[in-house]
Picture: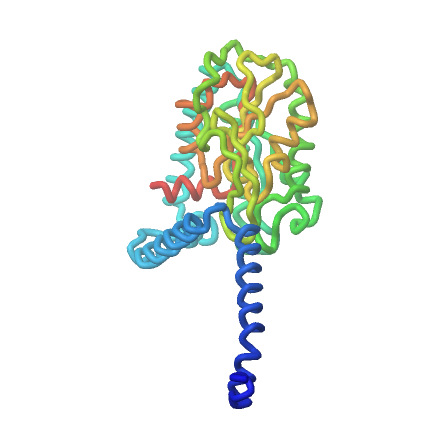
Length: 328
């Protein structure tokens, strides 16, 4: 009776109310489903707090950009586009100094050092001009120290670069690119199958890598390309924990994001694929995004050498000289 006494306008509004409530419930439900698929944490408040922290950090970085001595692009220009001979020579000298210490450390640890160069720039772009000079620099440097050097440029460049990488979203190697690297290294390592170290791994209940141990999470360096990150008890990006006194040949892979395998899952990285190709081989993935020779030397000398690797692979990249220059 009251409903009949209402005006047609009010009756229309009250008739829409259930539909609005249903729409609101559907919106909340869909947002919850979207959050569960995209968020890194199961607790919404924690995810929200970390999102706020990330935005506050981005604002602080933006506010301080004018105070930075040199930007990435400026440093790259000084080394490659319009090279400043003094700057380039200083960067090469600092890299060579740290590399010599790395060679000395691997010799003392009785592990065979191999250096592997991976191309990382898209042909036809400005950044690609750095490739020729860097390949020559690494080849000459390793020759001076009698260190085996393997340039995988020809093996990777025979395919379309968009297939080898995650372009156009990202320039890191794709699953296919990592498979090609593993295929080439598998052939190389067959020549060193009998190499063994006299060193022994004394303890396995310590952290020897630079990642947090015992992780099993979805890592999101950016919101569009999450990947599953699993680390073992020693802090390496390996699914299985190292076995103390393992009879398998142990190979330590040290490098940057191209060894770590940015934006792809553990089993899709070239160290994991390489290990799967030979049961008598154990590959330890010690790659960390952003690392260059200074970080890699510190990692090996202070921690990683204690796992007693038979072979140590140092993966180098075009931006390693840039990293040394920026670290100054």
